[in-house]
Length: 217
Ligand code: B12
Image 1: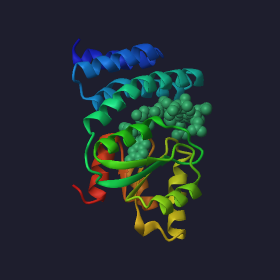
Image 2 (image 1 turned 30 degrees about the vertical axis):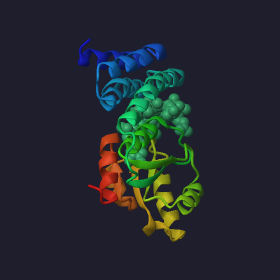
Image 3 (image 1 turned 90 degrees about the horizontal axis):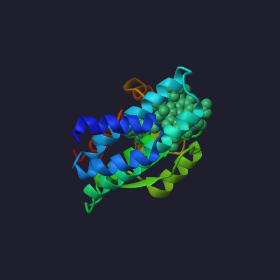
Image 4 (image 1 turned 90 degrees about the vertical axis):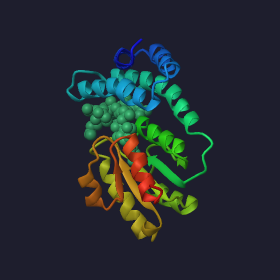
């Protein structure tokens, strides 16, 4: 099978809510030596975003969105493992604390970013989804990460990224940690407005910006 065809089939598998097929194609991608990040972004995630767009236009039900996300996750699990394997056995370049903000349960993008960061040599502490602002503050105090990553997938929860940065200031921790934000609705402008140190628009730029923040690139 050609690479383009495989990517297209991955996209189709997610749109067809076919977990089994997504898993099978992910394994096929690895067997073919395809870049697992490309398979995630240009295959599986492409299908998922399309279902998301249909949902946004009122043309798909939430049950369909959930089914598509499950197919994406089935394939992503296999590809994430390959990404980690490829980046294994590196010395830690820095410590990264990541989570999705309060009120937001989207985890797929965050998980991909976490995996890519691990592959790039970061020690990653993932504190999950729907994380209250004060928990971010407590965990920064506890783990003393070099970088804090805040994921938000909805325009309504983006405000929490701002809230976390404010809370870090109040706790006197803001100058001890770099903050990088990400998620579909997030822009460079928003990052500037709320005083974040960087923004990651996709997993690759998230890694690049993080290495830059710790001065490793
Ligand atoms: C999958 C999905 C779901 C799944 C989530 C499953 C899971 N385990 O994550 C389910 C079905 C559960 C879901 C639920 C809901 N969803 Co939803 N969902 C999506 C969808 C289709 C895709 C998101 C995704 O996984 N994309 C694939 C990944 C790879 O991309 P990504 O998340 O953007 O991540 C990349 C970058 O953003 C970046 N990044 C992400 N995080 C971070 C963090 C850092 C630190 C950095 C540097 C970078 C970074 O790197 C990632 C990798 O490239 C989006 C549509 C969209 N266009 O985004 C809607 C979407 C986000 N959902 C939406 C909505 C409305 C909801 C619900 C409210 C629906 C409902 N009525 O219940 C609930 C919300 C529940 C809640 N409280 O959070 C809306 C949000 C609208 C808005 N207000 O902005 C969207 C945009 C759909 C739409 N068009 O209407 N959803």
